Image (cartoon, rainbow, N blue to C red):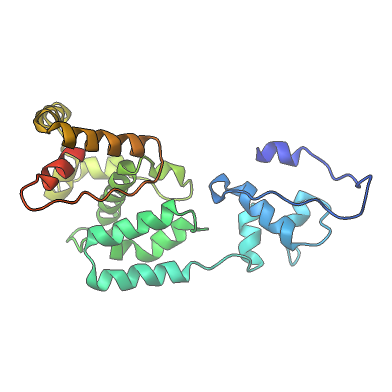
Length: 236
């Protein structure tokens, strides 16, 4: 889409003198989103190169130009929120908070937030920095996959270094990556067939909603002994 936009040229309006409304753009579209911000803020730009130029310096991307102009948040509020949460929350809770920020599309520079908070997102393991980063990224990927998305959807975020992880002899990393797919499938089949008709219907409704990305919140309620935990483990 961006290449298509850059192939266009500016033409004077034949009727009237105002520029038409610029439609809203999702942050997921990346450079197109930042281009829209610049078009709404800068007066009378003559080219895309001029849009990317700030104080005589042409930046390689519209996003960089936005930050140079101070049009975007410096992400400090998100960094502070993660650091504060790490004081009382578990590693899983803080990672889940980071994933929520990613999926909300409010982070202009998710990789910047990651670089300033990855130590708070880990579980304080006695590993070197590369191992901790990789294991933490692996756990973040797990949470994203449960929400039907992937870390690869955030192009500026670092991705799991499989070579570093696989070559590590650390027991914790090995256990985290040691999945036996046939055994897991067999366990799921056993648990799924053990569900009652009502529980199975709830399970199917939840999984259908997740796959269709409907964003519905489910609240499974019942007194002790109604197998709520069993249903949750089946979903995992």
